[in-house]
Image 1 (cartoon, rainbow, N blue to C red):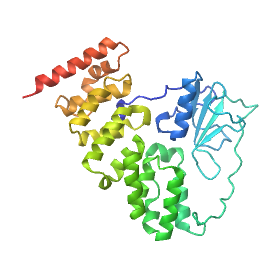
Image 2 (image 1 turned 45 degrees about the vertical axis):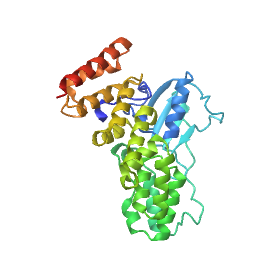
Image 3 (image 1 turned 135 degrees about the vertical axis):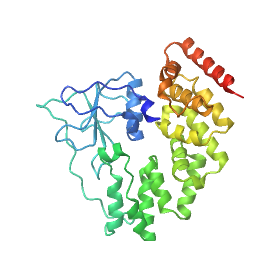
Image 4 (image 1 turned 120 degrees about the vertical axis):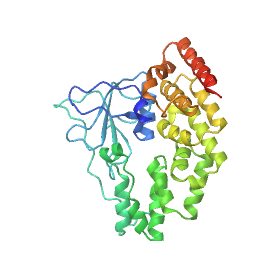
Length: 321
């Protein structure tokens, strides 16, 4: 499904100073994505998103046209999100395009993490796992998970320390849920069950994908209905539709029909393609031979979208035995 997805945040212009490829914003840490989305809603402009310029310690570099109103913090040093290594941001948000004469502030070198009973620095396995959590751009882009082999080799005390690292991080990424599942044990089971009951749409979907043993059929249905209801607001539409392909009782089908009536173009287009597939009208979840038809569900013309929905219902009715 990923090939047909579109960005939830508008594509920024390419930087004239740096010719690095533009980076998809949907996979940024949620706090960075929400920060940027709030600024765009407030009238700010996104100038560029790319790999950082020389001398800037971050994985992803974001440039805004004016100082953000979302937070009142001093702009010096930029706004940092995520962690590449202790003290180094995964995402750095700055204002306007820097110039060679006035380069952006460079974060201070990381300081050694204070010794703490939850993060035993004398444990090579815990240190190795913590390092694997600080993803660089390549690991993020390639979908590389955390160091699960370190978990497998860890003692119960070390696994407890790894669990605390994950909890402190926020459990918002699929890698977090995958690692919690690998750690296992009563605490992990309780945590996953709580996320499945009370978590966000993103968290519930990650539990569904990486800890299906914690989810019964009713919870699986509820999680998918919630995900389809929230759509691109949580940035995991492709993962959601992959699950819908395998599990689509009537409430999920009904949620798909409601989803394609929403103004979210990406959700409407891909939801229509999935409905066609589930009703035997397509050979794959997104049948590219029918792409012109599916694109009508994302038209700017409300009448055209309504006509496309009516045509899909008619096609399904005619295909019924």
